[in-house]
Image (tube, rainbow, N blue to C red; front, side):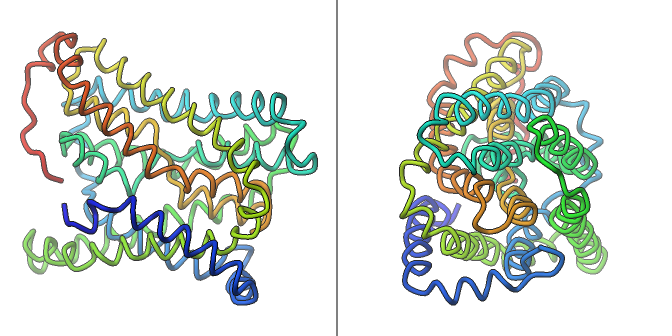
Length: 355
């Protein structure tokens, strides 16, 4: 891991501050950027998200789905957390905290929108940053690749129906066309582009050519991530400065959600006898969010200045530092985990620690 990646939290914090400051000083510029959209999809955000996600997706060989059976316990636990627990638990936490406990302290006309943003945030498992978290926990690379490939495959068809179902239960009108368009632009298109480029480089120059491409594109992905943060926090800077209490209140269900799902996945893997190098990434994949898609979908559905967009941006605000804290917990608890894990899988060693 490069020095730049090692201090990613610092760069994220600086970009957040820079985005808020620039949005406050130059609101006209950010309004103009925000107006550059087609079919309610912001073009600058789309380009940055593609630059961020495609280099990560180039690492994924969808043929790695054949490895699913090797770590079926971890795969099963992660799928259960991602698709059967996380969206619904976030909806419940949103209704409990935002809809009831915090309702007197939040703008009444934004309550439903805040809940919608939280649901959107939880409905898409993390893709891009998973590789960073996996490396930090010395995760099994074949498991991580298989899990991400499987999640992306499921997300293409499951994200819109799950969000639509839960938003419908929240009595919010769902513009299905915009939601499906967001899924196509931020999942389907990047996956297709990445796989075409990957196969082209492998066919022409083999793994060495692909590795050289990934090395060149690595900084592009991180710079795009940071630029996206500057842009998003520039859009939301006014609301963040004007509503610090709202930000803090919205962070509560998100924090509970992260630690709840990470802990549940970690414990279930331990009970199933899965090895630590699988349980670590499983817990992190189960807890983290594809915030790029969440922010884009929230903006597309409800607008830049909506409560939904703000709720997803709060997810961006706390995503990196919170996930780094989960990484720390997973690494520090390795001894406890391995003493309790049982079965053949617990005795195995990862074949590689690099993705």
